[in-house]
Length: 334
Image 1 (cartoon, rainbow, N blue to C red):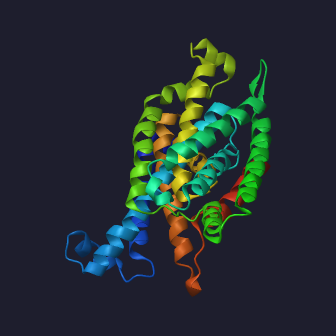
Image 2 (image 1 turned 90 degrees about the horizontal axis):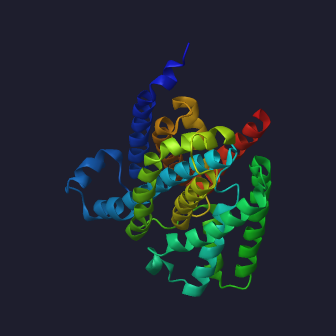
């Protein structure tokens, strides 16, 4: 008998939608500044104190917006990468795309002389350039003539590139000023450093333009997930479509990490959870993956900022603490 849960993905969309709202409310009402959940509605409707309005509209709302958009972008990016590479372990962080974006942003940051908030709208494009160059090299070294991309080689080559590029970042900042080193260290830890409205505006167009296109071409992704002879038999141009979707996946991942820092495993976990809940067809599980990615990232950031003793842990580290065991579990499983 068919799995009734997979037959009705709307059920999971409703559940995850409720979880998303709860995660947003919790993120908006927790923190060092005095703004509790019972004060959210008065402040949102214009009846809050100046301090409460500043905390909500200038600190917490843009941060939550960045987290939600980045979670959506990373989830869709991971879904696309896993499909076009036929590798269930593919994640833009694990296979080196984040590191390519990070190296480009590091060079740009050192060139900009610490004035990087003034270039907020340019950051995703800078990250995209570095990430696309890295992804192209990884794809080239992972492809065998006549056999296409080899999933295991893709993973190993990506890990190698990630290590090499992270080392290059360390070399670049070894002689830099203290504040420059601090910025790169925060980026590597996934500290969500770009949490102001300009960074929301920098990330928003990439998500608004590219995610609907992925939905529009979801049937092409369904075909790409088939065995290569079957996909060719259905009349799809494999090389062309893979390159197109690779560019989209890289663009979404680069835009996200350009404002959040190095956050891996969201693009790995969200698609797996979504496929388990809604089935393998992209038009069904992509919305579930998007909500899952947003909830994971918002929850990780909230946990990191509400630990006892005033301890603050970057969202990237919290996600890694969850994602690394999950990665090992997937490797062990298959």
